[in-house]
Image 1: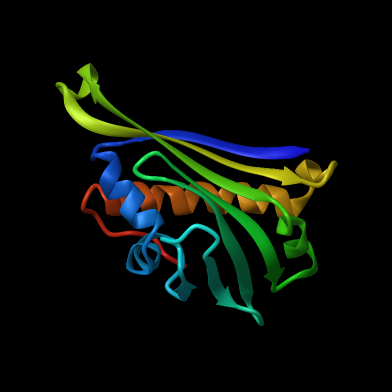
Image 2 (image 1 turned 90 degrees about the vertical axis):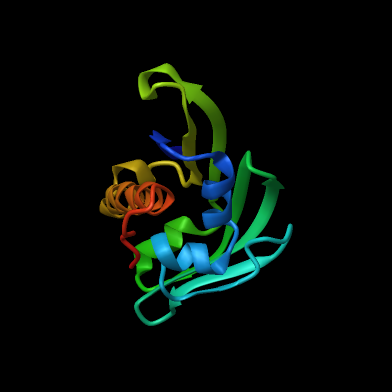
Length: 153
């Protein structure tokens, strides 16, 4: 199965990043302006976007306070290729550290995974596009976490 991985450092405590992943107001700032649901509840469902243009519905599979958030993609719409997201898992693993290269400042290392893509999908335009948009959106997460403007769609 194909996987998308991104690893990056955010110069802020894990609690800030976790809040942006588990609150509707946080998701509005960095990922989708049109987000609704319960990202702060285990087994809660969250909907992103509009079924005519771009849509995802996820279920919160795991919440480890300030450490991990996992979503299972239940439904997608917007294009035939979007269906490749169905039944995939999206994971944000957070590790808070004091980094010497930042003068001992508290930072959060984020390991992002989007896995469970159907075999062979990593050689599709849809997979390449998803990888790009995740990088774009994760930069928005980093920016908002650090007090800069986000890049929500």
